[in-house]
Length: 158
Ligand SMILES: [Zn+2]
Image 1 (cartoon, rainbow, N blue to C red):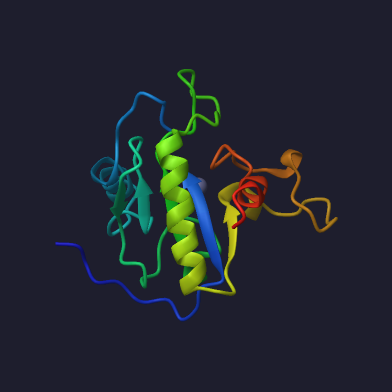
Image 2: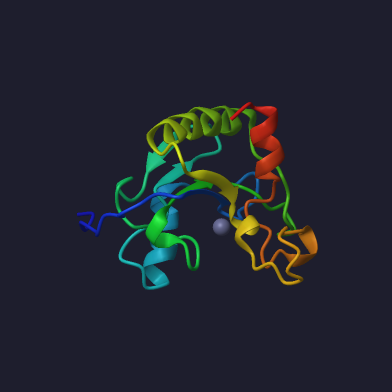
């Protein structure tokens, strides 16, 4: 049922996303696959989905090229945390403890498999508009994944 897609040649980035759904929305791979099919993708664009209860669902096979981040799909793995906006649809770091625990384990495993890969949030791949070598919040073209991945990694020794 899931089509076999082309494998990546390299993995330089592990990109953390959110589904931009509210905290009470218990969605997962099935719903995201439907959204992505409507957008014309062959299937879900992410490799992993972490549901509100911390359970993990596999989207594309980990070796395959994903569809989750403009300009970086051919060399990255995409992980989607379900949640990330409040009831008004504004970006919010409202992920559950269980989700963060799963994220920590998953990123630890990915880091072990792709030793040279950098773990980033989707928004950290926004263009560096003022050319200072840093991507600052005023340059974010989107809020995804609604939390600061770099400081979270540091806090979790990843
Ligand atoms: Zn994203």
